[in-house]
Length: 458
Image 1 (cartoon, one colour):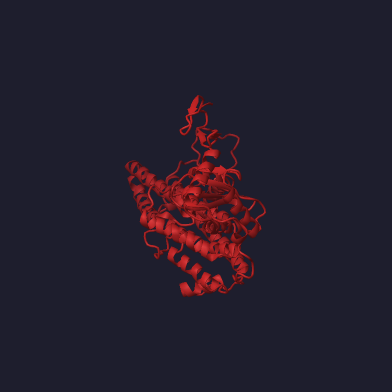
Image 2 (cartoon, rainbow, N blue to C red):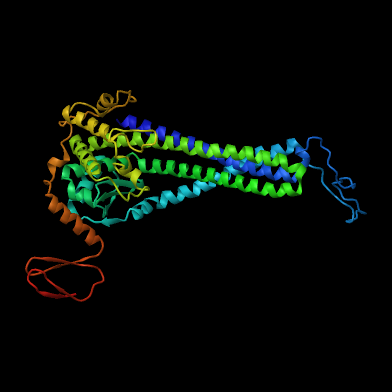
């Protein structure tokens, strides 16, 4: 399996390079187009058919004579067509590619250092500590040890009744795992462990970093294509004004701009399309690998399979509403792709959920079966050769057998709710009758216990 993971990393880097080259090509086109438009207007001699251009009578002399009079007209000889095209292809085109790279690099730096926190902020995730939710902290710690992560990921809870989770971070040393309140309330310990193992696998394989690179490249490509289309549209509007002053010269410019505008429209459709295909294909493959990694870490494929099935059943009964489209592709199950559990397309961020569950169930039924073999049985395709570790239970005991039993759904709901309140700085006041009063932050005044009617002053 680990050789397959390394091979998948190399493929991801190759795809990132392809998208980067594609982005630089679009920047090159933008620079060349702007230069061509400028030279077409400022250097008519280079594009004139008969090359007959009238200039002032004063001849060109690079060395001004002592008796040179400023009253005489002076004009450098016009650029030739070859000189203009040389400037366009070997100066302005590369300059446009360089500007595109700078735009990408700035966005990449921003995403690398701040992208994870932005995603957590957008999802309204609340950071918790061990005292807030001991069971969740212990599960994450177990999976960190099993995966040999060098540092403990930060743990966040999203106050959302739906069931889902995602991981973020630029490296295994700087990572975070976020789970929804609905997932903590509904699932048992083995299911939560399977979900956490899947997300830890993403961190271990550096999926978050690679997908961030691809997402930034995709966003830059779309930004450049939209910019090219707007620039050409402005050029066409400007050429209409130019044609009223120079009717003989503007016809060719307008024709050229219309041709390039059509090309830009096609490029604006094709470029994002191809870039998204690359991005989504890489995303689907990494979801399979994260499932495989989760099975290796937990030695309990049924835990993750049951968790995915529970999430699928919930979305089938209650379709997702008000889904954050930025976070949706990062979840273990994309809420926007749950209408048909067996459907898949080139624009799907995740593999079909039903197939993922079936692969895991096949491994659970046949413990000696590797993920590669189970995948082949379901997909009917050839998986790239890799050294997959056997998943027999005798190899490594399940971590769930070493830990406490699962709590009831009511206990889970109370624990997750308390964790969110503690993280939000609620005050927990213990009454003498045994009731715990939860006081919102900043409240000052009297609180009456609903059971014994004791008055507490805050």
